[in-house]
Length: 48
Image (cartoon, rainbow, N blue to C red; front, side):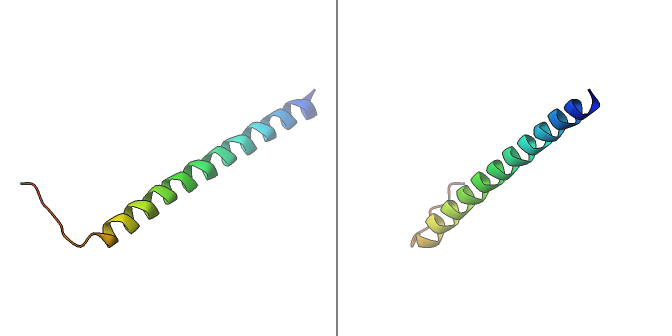
């Protein structure tokens, strides 16, 4: 019973780590897109 429980816990931990890696990759991709977009801008307009 303990081995089965430990296997379930290990699978859940791996799923959480996987989800965290996916979320981290999404955030990095969004950051890279935003950085590339603003680096290509030649004129900046600021609203006060």
